[in-house]
Amino acid sequence: MPAFRLCDVVLDETIGRATPDVEHERAVAIFDLIEENVFEPVGHSGGPYRLKLSLLDSKLIFAISTQDDAPVATHILSLTPFRRIVKDYFLICESYYQAIRSATPSQIEAIDMGRRGIHNDGSQTLMDRLSGKIRLDFDTARRLFTLVCVLYWRG
Image (cartoon, rainbow, N blue to C red; front, side, top):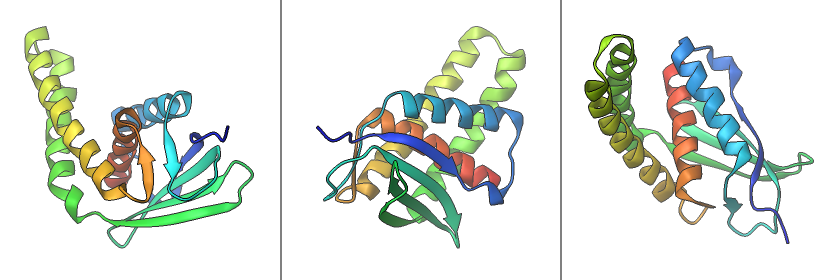
């Protein structure tokens, strides 16, 4: 049975680094993504796969190869459908990071619920944009959306 999963995920390092909070989110997302994911490039016979995510001219690039570095596909997505969601997500994340340092547990929980809701919207948008190109489950889309946000933050 072919493995329709990611075995490695790399973010374009030429963009730069982000804050420690953002870099922590990146590390956790990549770790969780490698541990458990569903990633099936449509029309390919099986992986596991390596994924390199990068930004170029306001476009999100998914460069997919097999575990042994044979090219599979490159998908280029416009960032336009993500702009509002990512902006809202940045704002609520800033509030969340401030809240975890000084707010009450109920305030933190309320902000976190809003943060998760926006994150879910972004994850669904990513799944919709990749429809017909890459089959993902929702948890994989959530982790990938986190990485898209990290790239956006860095850029």
